[in-house]
Length: 243
Image (cartoon, rainbow, N blue to C red; front, side, top):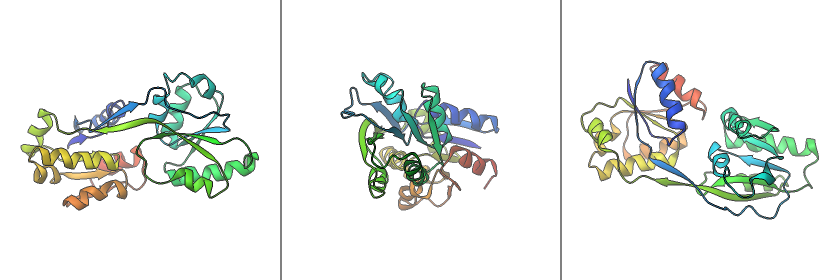
């Protein structure tokens, strides 16, 4: 299959390499640009642990002037890839939850009483500007205090590259991979701007979750395949199965 990967680098390169190993041809369209917020406000601290729902949060603090204050903290990460990114960034105490925010919330709620953290310092959540769900609110309902620090933003692209326009216009794309709701929305917006909405909706749309698929369904896409779990391995397995 000829597949279009819509996620930003560096994750796009990893996904493309995995797809090529499966024998697919891959094009890329980075429909979101991840920008760190320089000197993002973290609050006063101290904190009992860091919470991360994306490796983007870890990348965003690589040059933060207060990064050294965070390096000794435990990291509570969503999924094994984010946990691996935390270890690669130099954090030594990392706990990996399942691949969803809900699983991360459950893991934190289980960790806090076991460690006696109900009355300790707040958790510091390294968040993006646009978030799905309310992690801080769910943890607050369990009696945990969360300080949310917005350390990065995702900026949507407003047009496809000429190569992607040509591939879609020629009906050469067999499938499109969507990893976030915002990138799915950007895909639709770019297709409309190029006058290619019908051609853009025609391929199979492989989505990391049903929520991510919603904008595509609303736009009229007929063939949508959500992954069994919101993890890259589940999405690749779906594509590999020929489903």
